Image (cartoon, rainbow, N blue to C red; front, side, top):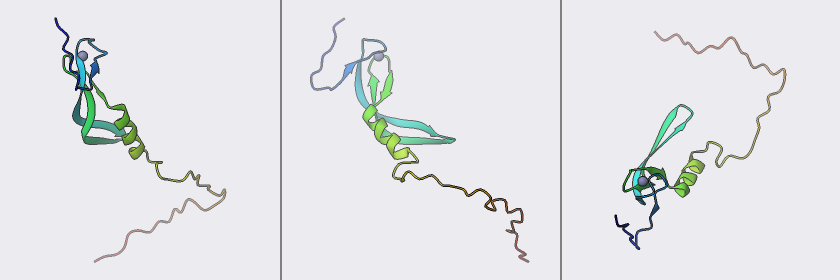
Amino acid sequence: MMLKRTINTPGFACFECQTGVMKVKFVTYFTWIETQLITVPDFPAWVCDVCGNSVYDQKAVNVITTLLNPSTGRPAHTQKVKPGSNMDTNSVQTVENQN
Ligand SMILES: [Zn+2]
């Protein structure tokens, strides 16, 4: 079996099957943030043309995890709660008489 070598395709040998070539394809990226499923369409991934093994493009993953990180763009700040501050207000009045 001849190994096809294409020069202008920036692919690399598949590390799963060692036969196929990993090529960039655009897939949908799935990730979970706590209980929320986040999907990113047209996400670059490397897909093997033989066994179909796919890995997300690491650079793009880095970008997306930075974007999705809830602490991104927020200054490091810890909120201090004063001991003894009246936190439990057990008389919450939200019901209004609307007739
Ligand atoms: Zn493969």
